[in-house]
Image (spheres, rainbow, N blue to C red):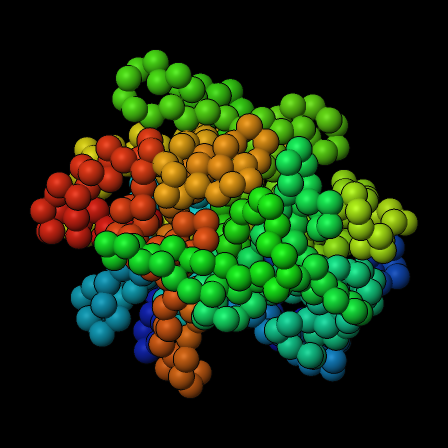
Length: 566
């Protein structure tokens, strides 16, 4: 399916790798059968002659092995490469996207792959694609292949490998919403993408940022701002005795469409003790009685975390430390904003949201000032007036659903270093020092999640989704739900080692770019390295922290190396 007609189509299959890595046994695109223009439903059935959509089909009848034709057989691995040029896109421009996939014949579905061999060595596999070992499939079949295009900033921006055709258009539509400024409707990647008219004038009148991507840039963690700079990619949850702050609401919104916002926050300075730093915040107005700073986290894997069965997480809980291991994780329980039912909290630094829909609609409401059917009333304090729209939902349920599907179906990068002896030693030590007691390595998702791509996947998120008391040094004075100020949800560790390049981006000319890493860990970005993040662990994490510190320098480096490969 395509939203516009293909002017040039390339579908090269059965890798040869002779001369260049783009050499395949055949290009099947000339055999495509075109249907359209028109409008097609989610099953790619044409329902109208009106519209600009096209459907392309063809039947592949033979396989090739090193250029020799053979019969198709179950289990054969077909590497193929697609490059699509679309005509009629907005801004009189041609769309182009090319990528490589690996398909298992007769089994169904695409596989996360790695390139094997040295292209310059004709006796090797010459960078032919083979499946990554399944223990490296961090996100099950959603797992992405290794990246060979030297674009480290884009690791978190790819669609799940097993994305169904039914969800393809919803995914790209959700992507557009994620990148749209909901004040002027502009797309933050390119002016040629045009204005999204339906999203104009939705944000505000008070907000933190008018687009999702402004805080979750490239779906990574927000960077820690320099001292004195506004923390406009953070969320400051606020409150007073017994509820929201009467002058602010539940979230401080520093910006306004017109006039002034609710006040700005900066890092005034850093306090450092024994090599560990913590931020000192400065408010432009009166500091709220209670507040909790939250840096924007990375987004990948959220759909899979939602798909973990509630009974599995409740089974991990040990609120009274019955087994005597010093770990007493307990679940956060919140009200589903749609049904009102008590549900397991999964998302946010204190697990205050039960689903991707809950988290997304909540962020639209408090962070962007955009009302939805889930949260149709603005975030206002009891003493505030004119703080937001009072006419109900602004973003349609259709667009909200597209955004939720987009976030839910982002691919998770494969674990790296599968044959790295140091990392493998670190994995053993990670468990021995007790890190795996909270950062659980493996779980299987439910068979009943609404999105088929997320069902029955064996995943490796390294979290138990439970609240743990991390000691007074990491505590805020606000709390959330059943979580005290010192309790935090165990953050997942998958893709953690890729995060610094995603957050920091790249510099240099195209095709020769280099990563400019930006590391910031924990809820307020205070930890500049993974080691610092470990050393901040107190409370229930104190025993593991002390065990890590008791390791030799070589063993500590192995643990850190292991975490970086996740």
